[in-house]
Image (tube, rainbow, N blue to C red):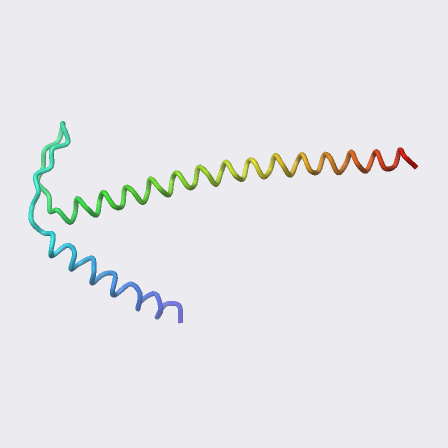
Length: 93
């Protein structure tokens, strides 16, 4: 069932990407200071889109790692405070 669903979703996406590439097939001169080339506009746009996606993914991954570190620190503090409160409760009795 999942394979059929993924096929039904991926076919329209492939058709849209192919239509996009066909509509934007005109070559564009690209000058990157050290490299000068001529590529179809669709390729340039897809590369820029993909690089933006990867950069966003990396930034989100860095934030996730920071949040996990903060969670571990707070969990350690909580465990320490619970241990201390258990010791204090025993000394009160």
